[in-house]
Length: 155
Picture: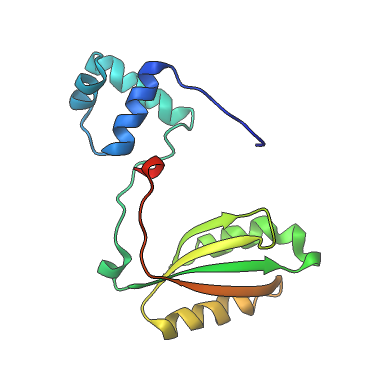
């Protein structure tokens, strides 16, 4: 995956830009905004999904509204002899209710795990029960998130 730069044609680029800004844009409005027929737009969006350009459509929900107002980013280092367990660890952690995102990293830490918890006790229990106690984990470091701002690329 090193430096795998891909380029979209101008029409697909405009479709992606419009959907990044407003993911719930109806097809007819998207087609009008991009300047193509609605049928052409539908075919192009389907192709973008099939090719993996558009990875999915989802609603971003504020975790506080579902009873998880405390967010943290937890750095995780695996033991040197646990390198064969990287994929299994990432899959297991990503499947946990508290987990919003799992990032596999280059550098000192192997993962950053973005979590949402009910309170600080719930966060502590998550770290102790699911991360620190895992046999493949050498170290965890938890940082509370005070605020999150979405970058332009993620709009």
